[in-house]
Length: 113
Image 1 (tube, rainbow, N blue to C red):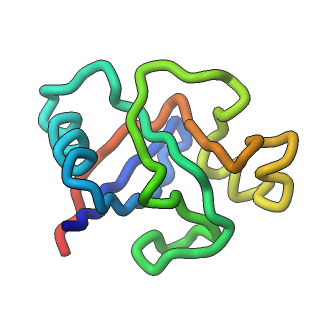
Image 2 (cartoon, rainbow, N blue to C red):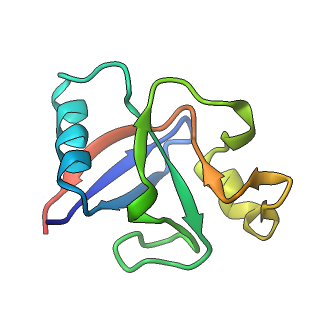
């Protein structure tokens, strides 16, 4: 099972994630339907390579690490554009452990295959 979802942040840019876990896919659908209102932000580990399902970006989120959160620590927050512009610095002092949790992230749609 696999499903792609788009999210945006305060910049208005769109970023696509791929979910391969049935529980995560259900969570994402509950967020989109408005049923889930607390854990609605996206987090996971970045991979510094493009993914065909996420055009326009030089990185993607590892599908096996994606979860949804209510609140997170500041050290993992970054906008999509800022991360793209500073991708070379990511996984060091900036986004330690390649862990990314954009606080303003919000799912916008499920992308049909």
